[in-house]
Amino acid sequence: MAHSHHHHHHHIDPKTGDGRMALAVGVNILLTVAQIVGGILSGSLALIADALHNLSDALSLFIAFFARKVARRPADDIMTFGYGRAEVVAALINYTSLILVGLWLAFEAIMRFLDPQPVDGWLVVGLASLALVIDLVTAWLTFRMAKDSVNIRAAFLHNVADALGSVAVIVAGIAILVFGWLWIDPAITLLIAAYILWMALGEMGSVIRILMLGTPEHLSPQDVTATIMAVEGVDDLHHLKLWSAQEHETALTAHIVIAHSAWGNVAWIRQNIRTTLHDVHGIEMVTLELETAPEVCP
Image (tube, helix red, strand yellow):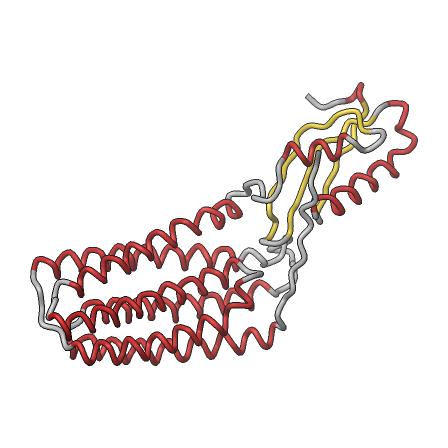
């Protein structure tokens, strides 16, 4: 039996969202500069790692901000489906950048294990604490928008990872101050890198699925087929295609075989299929090719 998958999204006002994004970009760029300077002065790789991740936060927020504006453009002769997928492309760019940052941090941490360096624990703790506050503010600015957009969610997860990274750097700084454990700095860096890679690889699949025209995760072709077949007058169907035209807009095309005796009601059948698909599965874009049994395409 088909299940209802109709979703309702409570969108934040675009102007309010743009303002929040711009503010988040600004504070992250300032923080990145402070952390890089502090990391160099203190000798902490973990702090520099946190700074570079923060820089990727600022870049991801800027990319997300730009993609949001592009996505609101109406369809035209060049992009007849509209520009909504700009946000999906931005998410892919952001997750790819996260993976590159994670791999670089892992490499640098391994090198630091082989060649330990002195670290100023107080400077590390101070700057990492400042970073944590700014990361939490940025995450708060983007949290509501992340619920509705894979693009903003990618930027939001950048910040969540960075907040956790800042906590880890604070722990490392305290351990260096109390116990003199220089090895904990690259160890914490490895943990930050591992978390970044795990998070980015886990989220990237759904983004690639949209770009590759995969079936939306919340839909089953079998359920959709059963829903159409249950409409009175439908004899059979084939060439069913389901994909996400945009993140929150599902599209369907199919060839519907109408019983010969029902051909006089073809307009009613077509509209009934459209209405049923929208009500049961939340499918907005439906294109149907109708055929009678003797004229079924090969």
